[in-house]
Image (cartoon, helix red, strand yellow):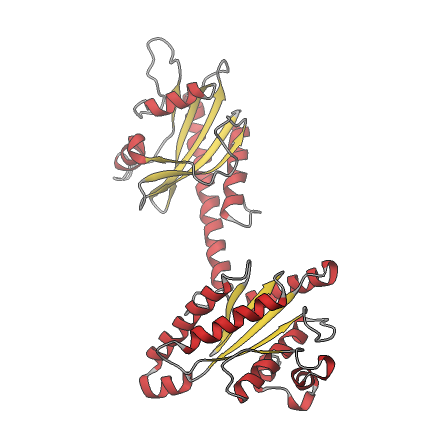
Length: 368
């Protein structure tokens, strides 16, 4: 679990480890989604039944079908007790209760055991920050030795270890999210763009993938800040961020980002340059309809156009910046596209190649 990069990988590692530790044929980890009142299965491992998938998209069960989640997993230990696991079997031994942990036997679980050819299961609550987070479920096939009290106690310990791993993974996932997200708009930030652009250019070099960068400079932000206050300026940034996200969704896999201040971008890997330019035009139109601000200056640079070699992310950024600089200087209501007005003699390409005439935003961005 410590080596996992995502919560799903962490849950998968936990389920595999617990299944082996308890000599089970099957294991699952589910999360209690309180707002929806359901247990959602995150992962199934081991011998799967026909109606089970390793990473199910929609396997969930209403909590009212599993009253121990609300009762046994919460009320009985909310006053300071420790949650413990219990066992359920298809055919309990004569004279013995159907569980070994104090929870009431659940008809739905028993029916599911029988339907899937399993003879017994052990269920352990996963508790994070003093609250029931979900459950650990391990089963054995019909005919195999059933779980006993010692297995239930061991499952409780394994659930605690799983909870610690999940907590660590969630903290790391949140840290990664914050590291690659702009706090104001919720879009990606410059760090995320740099990483994705490097990956995209590698695909361009090895597979010929088209990489396109749309750089946007939001017009009128300073005027809004000076006349209406920074809170209103922030609202303009948020609204344009929503427009950028909406337009980015028209390009499969595109990344919408705020580079900083009033600068934004769209990064697309794969779609043809013409599609990117079309979306850039839509972006100009929608930005012009915003209640605040004065529209947007948009520049586009794509490896699908005659812009010359693009050996680095810096080169593509310089071209897109130069195009955006041209759009801003001309107060253009449409995007300016590098390379579409003369190839190597294109004025945008020449501007990007002139070290003493680089546009201001690009110069600031690459200053060290």
